[in-house]
Image 1 (cartoon, helix red, strand yellow):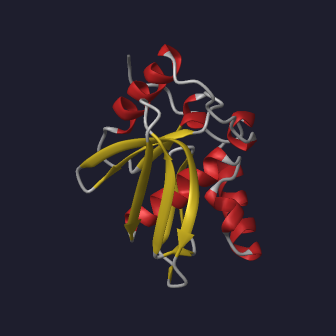
Image 2: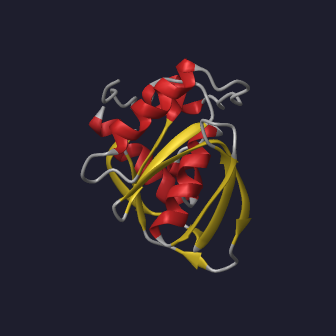
Length: 161
Protein backbone atom coordinates (compact mmCIF):
# COMPACT_ATOMS: atom_id res chain seq x y z
CA UNK A 1 0.00 0.00 0.00
CA UNK A 2 1.17 3.52 -0.59
CA UNK A 3 0.52 7.19 -0.65
CA UNK A 4 -1.20 7.78 -3.97
CA UNK A 5 -0.86 10.66 -6.42
CA UNK A 6 -3.69 13.21 -6.22
CA UNK A 7 -5.58 13.84 -9.46
CA UNK A 8 -6.06 17.52 -10.22
CA UNK A 9 -8.49 19.48 -12.33
CA UNK A 10 -9.12 19.13 -15.31
CA UNK A 11 -8.77 15.32 -14.91
CA UNK A 12 -12.15 13.93 -16.07
CA UNK A 13 -12.26 11.36 -13.24
CA UNK A 14 -13.06 14.26 -10.90
CA UNK A 15 -16.26 15.03 -12.83
CA UNK A 16 -17.43 11.40 -13.07
CA UNK A 17 -19.93 10.13 -10.49
CA UNK A 18 -18.46 7.14 -8.65
CA UNK A 19 -19.91 3.63 -8.65
CA UNK A 20 -21.39 2.00 -5.55
CA UNK A 21 -19.23 -0.66 -3.95
CA UNK A 22 -21.16 -3.91 -4.29
CA UNK A 23 -18.54 -6.33 -2.94
CA UNK A 24 -15.83 -5.66 -0.39
CA UNK A 25 -12.87 -7.61 -1.75
CA UNK A 26 -9.09 -7.26 -1.58
CA UNK A 27 -9.22 -4.42 -4.13
CA UNK A 28 -11.57 -2.40 -1.91
CA UNK A 29 -9.54 -3.18 1.23
CA UNK A 30 -6.40 -2.01 -0.60
CA UNK A 31 -8.23 1.16 -1.68
CA UNK A 32 -9.18 1.92 1.94
CA UNK A 33 -5.58 1.45 3.05
CA UNK A 34 -4.39 3.80 0.29
CA UNK A 35 -7.05 6.41 1.14
CA UNK A 36 -6.12 6.35 4.82
CA UNK A 37 -2.37 6.49 4.16
CA UNK A 38 -2.74 9.25 1.56
CA UNK A 39 -4.91 11.49 3.76
CA UNK A 40 -2.53 11.11 6.71
CA UNK A 41 -0.45 14.21 5.93
CA UNK A 42 -0.46 17.72 7.39
CA UNK A 43 -3.05 19.94 5.77
CA UNK A 44 -5.20 17.12 4.38
CA UNK A 45 -8.73 16.97 5.75
CA UNK A 46 -10.32 14.47 3.38
CA UNK A 47 -9.76 12.40 0.26
CA UNK A 48 -12.27 10.79 -2.11
CA UNK A 49 -11.42 7.69 -4.14
CA UNK A 50 -11.77 9.50 -7.46
CA UNK A 51 -9.09 11.94 -6.33
CA UNK A 52 -6.66 9.04 -6.58
CA UNK A 53 -8.17 7.77 -9.82
CA UNK A 54 -10.54 5.11 -8.47
CA UNK A 55 -14.19 5.39 -9.51
CA UNK A 56 -15.70 3.88 -6.35
CA UNK A 57 -17.79 5.52 -3.59
CA UNK A 58 -15.30 5.74 -0.73
CA UNK A 59 -13.52 8.50 1.12
CA UNK A 60 -11.21 9.03 4.07
CA UNK A 61 -10.84 11.92 6.50
CA UNK A 62 -8.20 13.37 8.80
CA UNK A 63 -9.92 15.82 11.14
CA UNK A 64 -8.62 16.84 14.58
CA UNK A 65 -6.26 13.85 14.82
CA UNK A 66 -9.00 11.37 13.85
CA UNK A 67 -8.47 9.40 10.66
CA UNK A 68 -11.28 7.29 9.25
CA UNK A 69 -13.07 6.15 6.11
CA UNK A 70 -16.53 5.30 4.87
CA UNK A 71 -17.73 3.22 1.91
CA UNK A 72 -20.88 4.10 -0.06
CA UNK A 73 -21.54 7.24 1.97
CA UNK A 74 -24.79 9.09 1.66
CA UNK A 75 -25.76 12.25 3.46
CA UNK A 76 -28.82 11.62 5.60
CA UNK A 77 -28.98 14.84 7.59
CA UNK A 78 -27.83 18.44 7.23
CA UNK A 79 -28.52 21.27 9.64
CA UNK A 80 -30.36 24.42 8.63
CA UNK A 81 -27.54 26.36 10.30
CA UNK A 82 -24.92 27.39 7.73
CA UNK A 83 -21.16 27.92 7.83
CA UNK A 84 -19.49 30.09 5.22
CA UNK A 85 -15.76 29.60 5.65
CA UNK A 86 -12.98 29.26 3.11
CA UNK A 87 -12.73 25.89 1.43
CA UNK A 88 -9.96 24.39 -0.64
CA UNK A 89 -9.32 21.10 -2.36
CA UNK A 90 -6.31 18.89 -3.03
CA UNK A 91 -7.57 18.51 -6.62
CA UNK A 92 -7.79 22.29 -7.07
CA UNK A 93 -4.45 23.31 -5.56
CA UNK A 94 -3.84 26.84 -4.39
CA UNK A 95 -7.44 28.09 -4.51
CA UNK A 96 -9.46 28.86 -1.39
CA UNK A 97 -12.93 30.42 -1.56
CA UNK A 98 -15.79 30.97 0.89
CA UNK A 99 -18.19 28.07 0.43
CA UNK A 100 -21.58 27.73 2.09
CA UNK A 101 -22.07 24.39 3.84
CA UNK A 102 -24.33 23.07 6.56
CA UNK A 103 -22.85 23.48 10.05
CA UNK A 104 -23.79 19.84 10.90
CA UNK A 105 -23.80 16.77 8.66
CA UNK A 106 -24.51 13.07 9.14
CA UNK A 107 -23.40 10.42 6.66
CA UNK A 108 -24.36 6.75 6.63
CA UNK A 109 -22.29 4.12 4.84
CA UNK A 110 -20.42 0.92 5.61
CA UNK A 111 -17.03 -0.32 6.73
CA UNK A 112 -14.86 -3.01 5.09
CA UNK A 113 -16.71 -5.70 7.06
CA UNK A 114 -20.03 -4.65 5.53
CA UNK A 115 -21.32 -3.14 8.79
CA UNK A 116 -23.41 0.01 8.57
CA UNK A 117 -21.62 2.99 10.07
CA UNK A 118 -22.67 6.54 10.79
CA UNK A 119 -20.27 9.48 10.72
CA UNK A 120 -21.34 12.92 11.89
CA UNK A 121 -19.83 16.20 12.85
CA UNK A 122 -19.99 19.95 13.02
CA UNK A 123 -17.77 22.65 11.61
CA UNK A 124 -14.77 21.27 9.75
CA UNK A 125 -15.95 17.65 10.01
CA UNK A 126 -19.35 18.57 8.56
CA UNK A 127 -17.63 20.49 5.77
CA UNK A 128 -15.42 17.48 5.03
CA UNK A 129 -18.34 15.03 4.90
CA UNK A 130 -20.19 17.27 2.44
CA UNK A 131 -17.09 18.08 0.36
CA UNK A 132 -16.01 14.43 -0.04
CA UNK A 133 -19.54 13.23 -0.80
CA UNK A 134 -19.72 15.91 -3.50
CA UNK A 135 -16.51 14.48 -5.01
CA UNK A 136 -18.12 11.05 -5.23
CA UNK A 137 -21.03 12.64 -7.12
CA UNK A 138 -18.61 14.24 -9.62
CA UNK A 139 -18.82 17.72 -8.08
CA UNK A 140 -16.10 20.10 -6.95
CA UNK A 141 -16.52 22.77 -4.30
CA UNK A 142 -16.14 25.34 -7.09
CA UNK A 143 -19.55 24.23 -8.37
CA UNK A 144 -21.12 25.52 -5.15
CA UNK A 145 -19.70 29.04 -5.42
CA UNK A 146 -21.85 32.01 -6.38
CA UNK A 147 -21.68 32.66 -10.13
CA UNK A 148 -19.41 35.74 -9.94
CA UNK A 149 -17.04 34.10 -7.46
CA UNK A 150 -16.96 30.90 -9.54
CA UNK A 151 -15.98 32.91 -12.64
CA UNK A 152 -13.14 34.53 -10.68
CA UNK A 153 -12.00 31.13 -9.38
CA UNK A 154 -12.07 29.62 -12.87
CA UNK A 155 -9.96 32.49 -14.24
CA UNK A 156 -7.48 32.06 -11.42
CA UNK A 157 -7.38 28.30 -11.96
CA UNK A 158 -6.79 28.64 -15.72
CA UNK A 159 -3.95 31.07 -15.02
CA UNK A 160 -2.28 28.39 -12.87
CA UNK A 161 -2.55 25.61 -15.49
